[in-house]
Length: 267
Image (cartoon, rainbow, N blue to C red; front, side, top):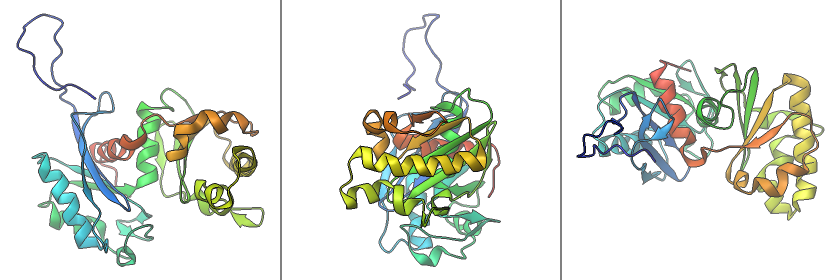
C-alpha cells in the first residue's frame, strides 16, 4: 500500500503524497469495495473499504452502498464504478450475481442521483480489471492485444489493444466445441467435477486455442481466485500464447474503475 502520511522530517529524499488521484468502486455479488487510487502507480492510497452487497441487490440498494463507500473517504470528486454485467450506451444489459431489476437500468441516471450529480464512469467489472492489469500489472509494457480472463463461477474477459479497451467482450459465452467456454473451463466446473489440474487445463487450453485463432493475442492474463495457484496449472497449458497470472488481484476492479473515470470513459 502507498503511505500517504507526511513525515515531520524535511530531508530532501522525503516523498510527497501522491497528487494524481482517482476513486473507484467495484460492485460484486457479495461486497461493494472502493478506495482512493494513485493513478501514477496504480496502488491504493490507504486501505480499501467494503460494505456487504444488499440482498436483494436492486439498483437503488446497490447505489446506496456505493454512496456509502464514497462517503466513508469523504471523496467529492469523480467516481468510477464497476458492475457485474454488460453496459452499453449507459444501459445495463445483463446482470450476473445481482438483481435482474438491473437489466434496462440507466446506470448514469441512477448513480448521478445517488452521488450528487458528480461525474461517473460505469463499466463491466472484468473490463475494469483488464484495464488495471494492462496499465499497472501483468500486462504493463506489452504491446498489441492483451486479454484478461477471469476464471471463477464463469469466465470473464477483457481485451485491450495497445491500452485501448474493447468493452463487453463476454468471451466466456463463446461456444467452443459443443459448449460455451465457461461451461467447460471455469474454475467452478473444475470444482464441481472434481477434476485434477491436469484434466482441467486440457479444457482451458482448448478454450485458449480458440481465442488465439480468433484474436491472435500477445498475452493472456489469468485472473480470478484460481490465479493465486497459478504455479499448479499455468505450466500445464498447451496453447501457444504466453499465459501469466494477474498481479493486482482484489484491487484490480477498483483501480480500473478509477482509471475509467479519469479518462472520461463511458460504455
